[in-house]
Image 1 (spheres, one colour):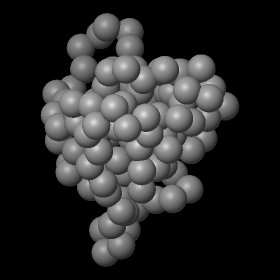
Image 2: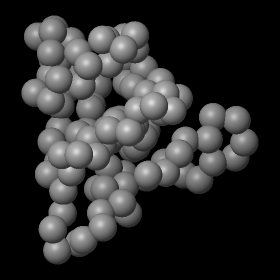
Image 3: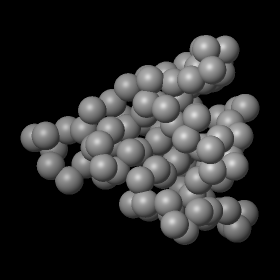
Image 4: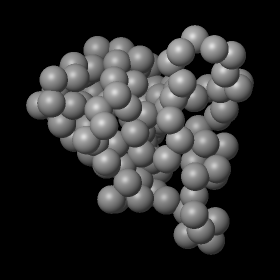
Length: 105
C-alpha cells in the first residue's frame, strides 16, 4: 500500500477514488468491492456499515471529519486499514476484505 507524505513537500495531484482503486487493484479482472458512505450520515447514526468509525474510536482515533481518517496511517501496527484523500472524499482500504470505502462529506 502507498504511504502518505505529510512532510509538506510537493505532492502529486490528488486522484479520483476510481483511479486510486484501479492503481492498487492486483487483478483488474477481479476488482475489489467498493462502497460509498456519507460521513455525516454515519456520524448521525453512530456507525457505518463496515464499522470503521467505531473501530478507530476503539483505538483512540475519533473521526469527526474526513481528514481524521488519515491518523490511521501513522499507526505502524495497523495492517488492515489505510486511508488516502481523493477528489471524491476519503478512500479507506480494508486489506483482508479486499474492500475500498469512499467516505464523502
